[in-house]
Image (cartoon, rainbow, N blue to C red; front, side, top):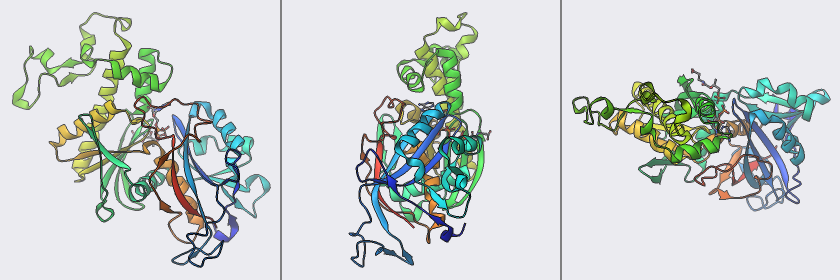
Amino acid sequence: MDPKEVEIPGNSDPNQPGGRISHLALDIGGSLIKLVYFSTNYDVDDEVGRSGKKSFGVSNGNRDHPVLKGRLYFVKFETSKINDCLEFIQNKQLHLGGYRHLEAPPIDKTIIKATGGGAYKYADLFKEKLGISLDKEDEMDCLVGGVNFLLKAVHQEAFTYMDGQKEFVQIDHNDLYPYLLVNIGSGVSMLKVDGDGKFERVSGTNVGGGTFWGLGRLLTNCKNFDELLELSHRGNNRVIDMLVGDIYGGTDYSKIGLSSTTIASSFGKAISDNKELQDYRPEDLARSLLRMISNNIGQISYLNALQFGLKRIFFGGFFIRGHTYTMDTISVAVHFWSKGEAKAMFLRHEGFLGALGAFRSYDKHGADDSLVHQLMQPFPTTSCLAGDKICSPPNGELNENESIECSVYAS
Ligand SMILES: Nc1ncnc2c1ncn2[C@@H]1O[C@H](COP(=O)(O)OP(=O)(O)O)[C@@H](O)[C@H]1O
Ligand SMILES: CC(C)(COP(=O)(O)O)[C@@H](O)C(=O)NCCC(=O)O
């Protein structure tokens, strides 16, 4: 679209007196809807401007646009509760934070960047309820755009997690590529990333976050995802998993490198226990399930990394949920299979990769390729909690409760 045909408007944020929302982007997935929006209390920033003028004085290369200083907010809703999400957008007037196609008919005038399958599935609903059109961005493009942005712009975004130890990873911008991105959403996509916008989806698996949540619900009668995670935290998988030691009379199978405590067969004890489902504790079922799925994803990820000679694997998607046991299991699987050669890394904004990528794509309407110009350390905030009906994760790693201080260009 010709940049001259669009304008990115600001609008008032009722929760922040004097605030302006200038961009909203959506990622509507199989399980969750993720929103990223930018809000500012300031008008045009005159501190950054080189010319010292109050507005339109900021220059970055060939660019001559106003700079808005403010925060990026992250919010999510369950896709099955899409009406709550529409209400949240309506109440906060976020839907005005897109761009406008000046020559389009009224119904198609306001356009919001959106990615994920729901951008197709729910396009008519957004038009009907909010009077906006969704400008669809490819999900894989957005995932990669989101990760690259986070890794380059946000301090302490990536970290390793093993044996209870979390360590932030210093990202060398000149030595970032190639890497494997494993996005664990409802299903799992694996992408080999070679640069900004340079990637290939090399694999995927249908055994992902939706499988854990779906099977977990059936097995435990849990009512929400965090309850299932919480249960898994307290469970013991050995009650139901068949270990090497169970098969080998308590000893290791050292000839092929298997210790007696290695899981030989997930849920394998259920074959011979002569028990019904209700005889198992939901905690133990949840633990076995989480371990089975995390192990499997860790192993497939490693095999893909091996095939393409990649040493670094970044894991994203809301399945991880900052949950220590999940990260530990994935890390151990990658470490075990790669004999310590490959490294699993996790991201603080794990679930918002696609939404951030969609947010960045507004910049296609601008003059150069960096919509978000300047980022600082993320700060915890409570202001995006208002409309979010989803509980906090059990370990207190609040990805959706954070905002990032930043500046954006408005055209
Ligand atoms: N509050 C929640 N409700 C449902 N699923 C959740 C929740 N938090 C985390 N999850 C997990 O995250 C997965 C969805 O991850 P996400 O990256 O948002 O993928 P998608 O784009 O497919 O919705 C779910 O399948 C589930 O395993
Ligand atoms: C179809 C999807 C890209 C949709 O993304 P999601 O909503 O799960 O984040 C994803 O579910 C996926 O990659 N599934 C695995 C399909 C496969 O390769 O077998």
